[in-house]
Length: 459
Image (cartoon, rainbow, N blue to C red):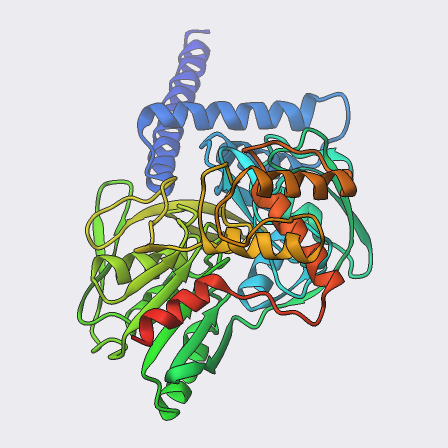
């Protein structure tokens, strides 16, 4: 009997020692795998405990994959960053397709402004642009589903789908109390990111619509062609460019500014990586055009040109997105997008939420709202259009006075659009411009920002 009890006791001691060794080994394994602190391992153990109970005790049969997707998504949501998100396999593949320059959808660049899903710019020539959606519109629903509080990629994914199908986009427009609903037919969106031409006085013109994996090579090819045509100055148009691949914009900036700093990339632990130019720069006078649709990677170029005094910025204040995202794949086919860094301009300025101010503030219609007392060439353009359309009877002088306001008001009454004196007139001006183009297709509207850029280079 005594021997039997000793035998049982020996088994119990062996089991306890084995459990302790197993626990210790597991702790060390977790620490090695996840570089986790001991307290964090407790949470990991709790996670797997909940996972096991859900898998074995939940009243209905569960899908392990869906539970893991939900766990990863919740983890990333907890970071409370609108640009960090879990990507399903379909979303991940679509992002890869977009970076290659082609994807299916409606043709809108969107971003986060004041925690709202906001259209940065419609892509020219796409269903989104042709529908009447405008820069600055807030997207509040897609196919009737409220998108308030959703992460950006969820909303983007909702607008994408089968080519030829209709998607309904509900927006709130500044200065209007009622919502607008647009029915848009999805199409293949192919983006040619670079266009170029030689303008008057041998001024070269180079437009970059976004930065994908082909942009740098396309830009260098275009610059070589412009130099062959004896370019005497360059207008670089970054208006409505929402960004894209960071490294592409940095390399392009390296060919525009002389040797020295381009951007400072700052990680979580305040580690600063400085990217610099090692070329002679563009070696001709440079003007860069920006507006509030110029964001992220395009602001890296604008910031480098301004801080390094390599050229002059013309237009309106840029969007103000200085965070850097990485795209990471997961073993089962999905992935996630995470903000990994922020960037500073060469002078150490963080432009997040502030944007970059141009040297010359020049506005095209839709770049600003108007109040009585404002002045500018864009207002003169607005007055001329209202005059041709028989709404305005005064002189075309560029002052936003009561007569101009009343003429705009008369137009809106005719079109049954709500009006606010100081808020939302930027969108009303765009509506007038669209109406004007339909009524007078033979008349070209002058690009006032580009005109100023050419003027500066032609002196």
